[in-house]
Image (cartoon, rainbow, N blue to C red; front, side, top):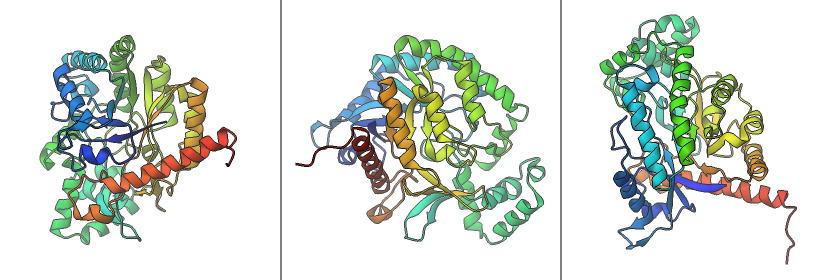
Length: 400
């Protein structure tokens, strides 16, 4: 497997010089400064490639390669097939072409309406003192039903859920409520949109009449346009699952379940139409079997996020666990991925994800989930598993 690291560009608190030291060969990044829907030009792509490959601070090559894009964002008009969606699709095609011209052949994207990923706490303290990202369902319901006051929200939750949410809200002071709003809608690392509360309500309203079936159809129509272009330039597209993998805020979701995966990959059967196996996202759901996904769709897995979550007792809440200590069996997942690599004679990109905030990083400015030390710890753990499994698969080595 190819070890990679997500880097947010020159503004990332984790510098490219830091990335040189963490033990990866490849970088995952994106041109976040380009507005959603606009073309990624060859010039802008090459500029970022230079920022990855050459350290001005050290005046030398970094030894790193920008090989995966995460993400080329899909404009909301494309998801809804409204407004200027045809132009945005054409722009997307051109961006794929330009990336291929620059030697970048793996593109991650998602089709989640409005929000890329949802958490209620960015600094949840675990017993050992590290801080993690967390989704706490009663807090989420409190935001949705009583702070956002989304139309119809009260009808979507049980009496028990609403009572729990009221208790959570009563314990919050004004600063804590404001922090929750910021956490929910102001945008997180990798998010492509940021909202004020009223704008957020308006954005949700635009999906009021779009069902899961309609959104799924819109995704298929998008892929019918995109995949032929990707195929002609040798680009692999890797859709990211919903995070969390369930309907939220009245929005439809189309990449949450086994049937969702099967539908999208069967409708567009080309190998270029693939997935990002995000263990943390799908690991939230007890209904997901990673062995099933890998055995059935292994050839179509082009990228992986090897992070872990721990599902909490209520069945809805979860927090980001250490990479080897969550609810998913990381050993089994990695072993099955290595066997897929061998079967199809391919290498799959991996990256550690959503590391804990720990040690000296607690004294630094960091992007939530993307501090350096926590991710480096996760990477080291994953690399250790890979080393052990490869040793096992190869039948061991003689000790001199």
